[in-house]
Image 1 (tube, rainbow, N blue to C red):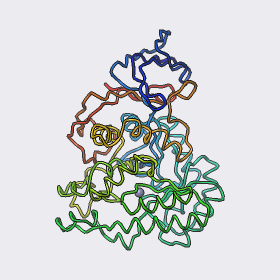
Image 2 (cartoon, rainbow, N blue to C red):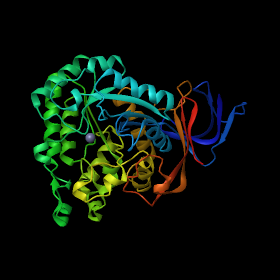
Image 3 (spheres, protein in one colour):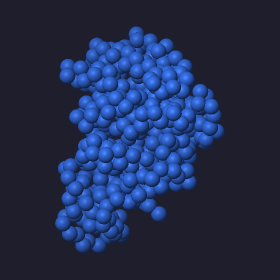
Image 4 (cartoon, rainbow, N blue to C red):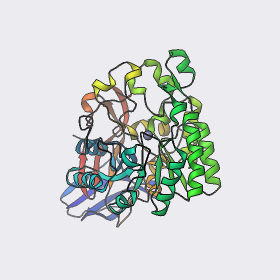
Length: 423
Ligand SMILES: [Zn+2]
């Protein structure tokens, strides 16, 4: 199959360059000023940009076990609609992805029916119970890219040290969801001024920070590779800065919602503003934006966390934490950060492509001749109304419902095949 993309602005080495691009046998075969090859499909991408496919290090596909929320087919379709060509599936499925058979199930399903590549993250502890180390070495031989108990956090420092030593031994990166349960308590939103105003119970930033401080120390002692999920506070960033300055192999990610929204969003009592970690203060948000810009935060990850309407449409205290993210990630970031003049387009695109690829040593993330054709085509000027009906994900739990989005994904191409096409 040959695909010829004509008249596009192609993102090459950080710059947009007007060229044509030919995909042949799954790879990018030619990038030239003008191409007139015969192709099975010609895409006139006038007015659009071609970016490397986005890579998401943090997604919940809910398959197996909670397929009423999402499954591998719907989840990867939603990912492709958002311009993603690869996503990492977190292991908090039912049963938990803590063994090779579960890893293989996800890989096979994704390979046969997925619209994006799926990399599997295995559990750090058995059933993510935080009691016993998982069979991570066996899972690594099956192709997991990292281990994590995401959604949960190992509270026992001694066990965490053992996990990190074990992971270090087999050179498996460990992704942490930093949350001290005692400090987080039954908190619903950020423990700041909006918690005081609304009477909703707060989660102190300390709940995140003490675990980050602990795990940096433990990872240093174990010689492990640590990746911190969804970082969200100013002090967490200071801890990461100190660790990086020391030369420790520590990386971190931030979600689109922590870059775009603050605790103020919770004043609506919309349960789609309830997530973990909670939306923080404006000061924290700005610190995260700056840290992403200067490279202290390595990349953006969605933490796509689907929940059904009947679960989210409850009193705030009883609704589950989390929101979907694939289909809005680029658009909300482009609007707030690039159009809002907080960072340039290159920094944003790198944060979604080459930078996450580097964190877990994944393929992809750039456009050049010879690489596998994982890319998307986006019109940055076209608006999209983001409605419930337009959502491809099985779940609709987004704080951006009925909002106009700046930009529109026109095509997503994975391995030279069109996996999403705007109707
Ligand atoms: Zn998490």
